[in-house]
Length: 381
Ligand SMILES: Cc1ncc(COP(=O)(O)O)c(C=O)c1O
Image (cartoon, rainbow, N blue to C red; front, side, top):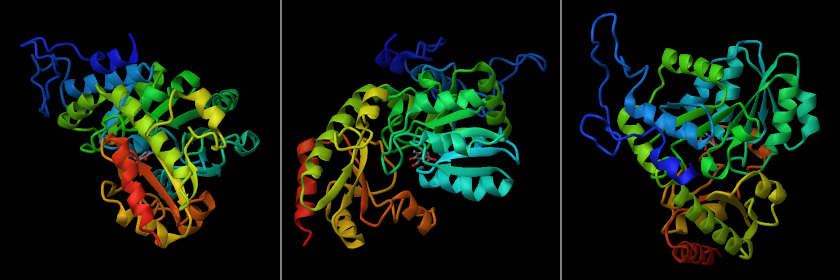
């Protein structure tokens, strides 16, 4: 079935007892056994819960995978995934990543004896050069948060497969509606479901989806063994959000492209980082690899910290908040907000400067969104 149909129905049958069309919230920690040696399908909600299972099956279907696993946050999904590796293993990690992922890699995993090399994954020679005998995994984010760099998933997975190395792709920015990394050879797709997948800024959650059944089983073992699972109510909300993912992504995409084009010509803006603009260095790759560009992008202002802070304060419709992917527009300053967990030198090396601003373009009327920017930018002296 097509994406929109699967987003509404995959993993979700009317409930058999009363025929409830919506998946019920099975708000229970435990399930009665028929006898000590006869558990039913579910026995304990850390190990499995029907509301969670419906969400996991729906996400697996939307990413063209065989197994989906959901977690209490995107970071919980990342941590659980990384627990399959051992001290002495080496990761190649994209040199542009979400600040929380950077912190987990550099301040937690490295302390546990994992070796990490940060690499510009758009440079395939640099990637080949970074691979060692003990390299076990390549961590990819595309487009990257917040600099919107796009990397070639097929080229990277081709190299990884040649060396027998796992690949992970954080697909949070595009969602499965626009990009399916598993179809391009990636082994594990990761999501912060907090963002577009839920779409309403009222849940924190994460997910991993894989194609390979044995890898799925290994990750399920870790999910149950470590226990960073979401509650049934959160799973219900994310399932409800998923039903409109296709419609929301189309509208986010349209609004974001429209705003990016507007900002690109504004005299107060230095440059706009949006893969849908022909000025974006990987515009052709982004257009070939994904079916859309998403709803979040960044731009550099003329002026420095003061100009950026002024803009954030002067916007009226846009809340100053981290996160992205909700129906409402949000504005943030990566230097001071989402990427503050990275040391200053690392931020600068990545290209995150004080005049960089990231916007999560919501589903409000685009004329109101542009009018808000117009009045805020006009108030800059
Ligand atoms: C690209 C990306 N990956 C992972 C995460 C972490 O997800 P969570 O905040 O749900 O733990 C975020 C959060 O902002 C993100 O932007």
